[in-house]
Image 1 (cartoon, rainbow, N blue to C red):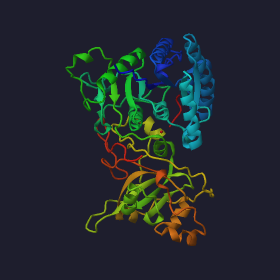
Image 2 (image 1 turned 180 degrees about the vertical axis):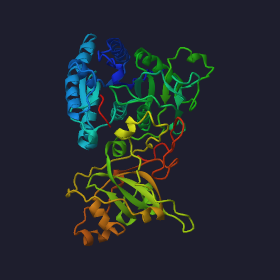
Image 3 (image 1 turned 90 degrees about the vertical axis):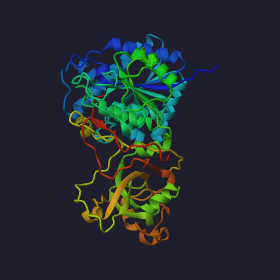
Image 4 (image 1 turned 120 degrees about the vertical axis):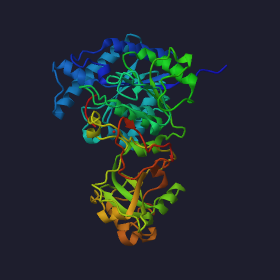
Amino acid sequence: MKSPKYLTIVIKLGTSSIVDEKTHQPLRSILSQIVDTVVQLRNAGHKVVLVSSGAIGMGLRRMDMEKRPKQLPRVQALAAVGQCRLMSLWDKLFDDVGQPVAQILLTRNDIADRTQYLNAQNTLRELLAMGVVPIVNENDTLAVAEIKFGDNDTLSAITAVTVHADYLFLMTDVDCLYDKNPRNHPEARPIEVVEDVASLKADVSSAGSSLGTGGMYTKIVAAQLATSAGVTTVITRSSTPGNIPSVLKHSQSTGTATSTGVDSTSDDKSNDHVPMHTRFLPDPHPIRDRYFWLLHGLAPYGKIYIDSGAYEALLNKAGLLPAGIVEVEGSFGQHEAATLIVVTKRHRQEAAPPAPAPIKVQTDTPSSADVLRTKEMQSFTPPRSSGSGTSTPLSSLPTQAPATKFPSPSTEFFELYDMEEVGRAQVNYSATEISRIKGLKSSEIPNVLGYSLSEYVAFRDSISFFNRKNGGKVGAASVGGGVNVGGLGGAADASESLGK
């Protein structure tokens, strides 16, 4: 007889699941159900992490304010007031059933710094080993736009990857994803299983509540982020958290073999008593640890354009040499991240396309404006998935003064080349230094710079790639009806506003 598999489960609750949107009163009935569910999972041997929004909503109630203010310092002050009450409420509810909890507050800076990231990971693992339920939230009191995750959907995905979770539950105000908005289209069909996010077509017109920042769009982005790292992700209704064990049981009994896209007419009678939900299946080649961190923990501050020969060498596990670099853009220093873009020269007979508006390379999470525009957006292309490998820190290299910011390459450059974003690199040289040594042999670096930090602009284990099977050209975007998530793949190698 098979021994039971003990899982690590992350459950994310949005503000609308914690406080009433109008009165800002805590929704104690839902919170009590969450506590009962977590304890049930713990008693079954599973480890559970909660990602809880609601600090600002609780702060509004405590300060007797009707509306969320627009001034950032006041919002942050409310978050400070509300976080105390939020954790006090969780601690009281869990204490009533004898379950210890811990508070973890993070910003993107905590993830971008490799040492802090590992410290957070070690703390979470130790808490879980001690039988504690960590309750994670973004540190809104300190966070500003540049260091925010953007929404707790993104934070929950990063948390799930950090603790190597098996499941991430994104609790929301609908049962599941639909191919159309069920509020406007009675014929809308539920999407039960998503095996390949690239084939997903769903409605994301519902944005977050007036207190929160998320919506269905951010949940799909979070699901893509988590599944790329091997985490099964489930979207289901927050008002019935007691359904989580049933969804887990159904998911484990069916495994990963099922259809992709829309399936609302299944004849399988075993599904009759399964709560409605949408399940995103994990990537069969997940990223792990450092390579996930390179792609989703570090923010790229510039772009390095490389030729196809350099790209092929990198795929064959060589490091990035200056000889393969064609152009550099942006402002970044040593040990910071840059986007890697492969350029291929166009044939002379090809007509050059019109000069582009400033090229915008898609990043791993949407900006604040992107998230807040979810009502207007009819389609989107979330970030591509990526891969895993080994790591070697660059801490032994000396630091340099801030880099000069290099403007976008000329219009002629874009007319000469086709280009494709392929990954991220943590570099050994600043943008200023790379601009001086690009195209040269490594042996020429000392003659040009007066010193040589390394023969490589970036070591191979400081580079992480996207899967190119569904790759697209830089700047490509898809706009149409519903959501059409294209250009995504599995692993080849080894997210922004207040509202928690």
